[in-house]
Length: 393
Image (tube, rainbow, N blue to C red; front, side, top):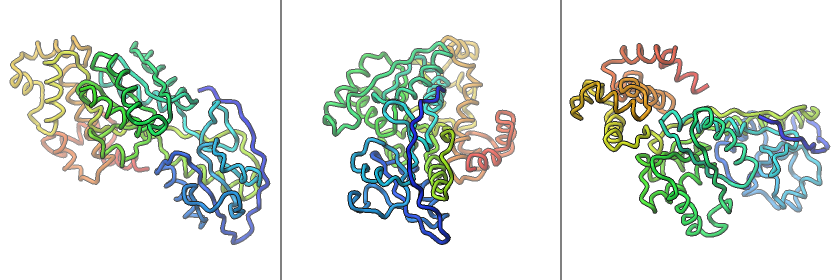
């Protein structure tokens, strides 16, 4: 990833006298809950006071803050704080893609690449990215497109005319999205720049009778559970580790408040993983018969009877014919596809639930915890419990 040009912020640290309780302002034009939680976790450890831009006192008159953590730099109300030259840590590149040090920001290209990889693994060859006319969206699309090209798939970018539905009316935005989606022949896959946009795209798909995930796989970014898990179809999302983003920003601000000099380079946060939910939990297929088989596998993956022999009997195909159906769609052999789905489902339960290993085994269609652990160890080179602990680290 090319490092953007840097701009320095000059400030006068107030020092870190013994016993001083610093008061910090977190300013986000668009709210990110996990980022707020990360900043708050560090502040609690240090005994700091944390204010949010949403409920802070009058910025023009207040002189109470010792430091500022800033997500969006173009906020006019914050100019009085800039003039006071308090320590400031920025959380993203600016609209021109430039860094203002000190900065903690996300590897946006890695986020886009992770999203594309997830969709490509499910067999989609036509990928769409919906974002905005800003540096962050363009960087995410760059990584998204790079991964698609690696696997000889197509990737197209659509830039929304406005940042939020309120800017032009939600009706206009739905029509704009719907017209773009209707230009594509299903199945295809969509990555949205963030979860709220993903939920809006879901509405647009419903308006033009595109079924998720049977015809359109959909993926967001931020893993905002309140949005993702309460959507019409639970929304898959890239977990871009916003908690660590906020925590590391507060840690860096603490160093500045203690009198440390400006860092020589920004801190870069890597995305963690894709949290798979129903909106992309399917494998793409143009053949309606194959699509029915894959849907059955996904719906019944908890049953030990979902195997190649069981599929052949249920759908009236010989093993050879069944294998040819999968091969013609450029998919892995049926047995491997079943294993892949079971493995992804198991990883999801291990990472996102408190189920016992035996419960996970049953939910994923294994006859016993022993057979599950043997399978998991072969595929992931570690035990299910070790995978769970690593995911929580």
